[in-house]
Length: 382
Length: 249
Ligand SMILES: Cc1cc2nc3c(=O)[nH]c(=O)nc-3n(C[C@H](O)[C@H](O)[C@H](O)COP(=O)(O)OP(=O)(O)OC[C@H]3O[C@@H](n4cnc5c(N)ncnc54)[C@H](O)[C@@H]3O)c2cc1C
Image 1: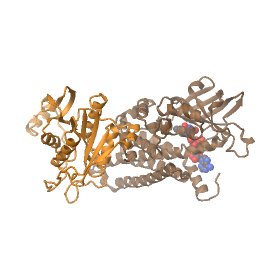
Image 2: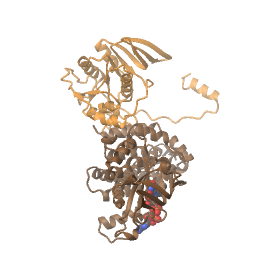
Image 3: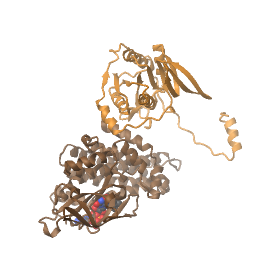
Image 4: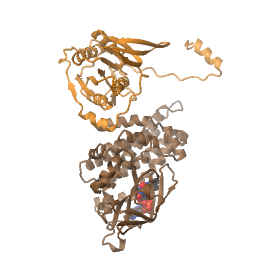
């Protein structure tokens, strides 16, 4: 059987129980989609990537991606929970067996939420290795000080995967060294050295600032070896980019479908507006662009799932998909004329939601710089 | 008790149907296919009977193109135990399907056949009734409620003007209506399990059934485009128009 298609069907069914009004109301009140996340968790979809031995389904990015795509296509906002799928990847690949046994089965059944990933800092966004949050080893424990920003879903996560320096930047030969990854229990840390403050943004994304003030964590919180954290984080980034690309494809499909339906239905000057090429062609182009981005996304996922190099494809997929979803959204808005601006149509909301992906988790310019330097062999631009 | 649930692969009901240029039928090339919604309801009910401990095994059966296997897998992912595939490229008519199903019933010996009242492709609404006749079994059609006890099924049928409750002796063929139950979405672990569930294959020849079509389609056409509506000024005018022009009240 084509498991992927079966998954697509089932997720689309599940999403039908959470109509657009559900997401619209959450957006208006900046609420968290608890009921939706519960349903998705109970049906096992957030445990897609966790191996069967740890209570998941052991499927690849293709299946995980299709789940997120369907959520986005239905009009939902997968950003509220996508990280529960992939943040555990770092733990899976680099954690000790004891850590995996302790956490993965509980992440798989949703008892533990690991969907906060702390990298970005006020003075270190694109330039990750210049982060200043420091974890100092003292009497068999780590004491963490520093500040993170844009850490999404921290208020809706039990655990935080944190990147911090363990050796000062001027004491390592290469700036990518001396960084370590920690698994911090947010529930224990809150009020004991960790403060979380929400940041209001243009969409309902539950992102926060985190302040670390002598937060103590045990040695067991370290994932893998001290000092190798940057490499561990990089490992997970391709997966994240590919999954975000799937979401953008879902957004693009949402916009194209809405635009097509409206262009067929809306009568102006005695005919459907879709008969005008000025309306029809931008939708057709968005479709062609979406399909191209979708093929790249599938190629990236296929490579990831078969263990081939996928850095270039993962980056290109995210670049192309995040741009096509935005353009398709703009076309959809234009097709709807004034109605596109009405909240009740969900187009302006989806457009706000999909815009993020040209900036996070990595911005378009940085992808272009990567392609220029690493794929084409052009001089490094920064 | 074993429950047999026939399921049909049809054009996805949410996809817009296009008539072929030569008007010989509906264009199915590249069309999205899905399990007939009424069949889904039947599978759901059968799985619930199993969960309630009333049914011991749920077998889904599908006759049609090889890809009907996907439809069976959907049923298995919803919770059916095994599948029977009857592959054929012949465009099957209700009587042929009923005969194939009878042959499967003879082999499987179920205590109940639960099936959709009709498939949304041809909207024939014949197969269940024909099957019951071929088997010489009791039938309950368009059911919106079912309870099984003491070798009988108490079913509620949706009929014009109200509900009818019937006591049907088992074994029986029951055809389900929309309001019987809400089909579930399959969980990921169940989708994974469905991959490993067995599907037996029997060709129409194996089952000794001649499926040659007896009907000929002369022409398929799109329904006429809907006329624009009108706005009325008052309730009185509406009532008058409904009475005099539309003649519905
Ligand atoms: C809603 C939201 C949620 C987020 N969630 C998380 C999260 O959960 N965890 C986390 O760690 N981070 C998160 N981020 C942070 C996100 O990853 C960063 O915003 C992103 O990496 C860019 O960093 P910056 O904002 O500091 O931009 P900067 O690094 O200041 O860059 C600003 C602009 O300059 C461009 N630029 C920078 N350097 C170059 C160059 N060399 N050449 C050309 N252009 C350049 C960039 O492309 C960008 O357009 C989130 C951000 C947002 C807005």
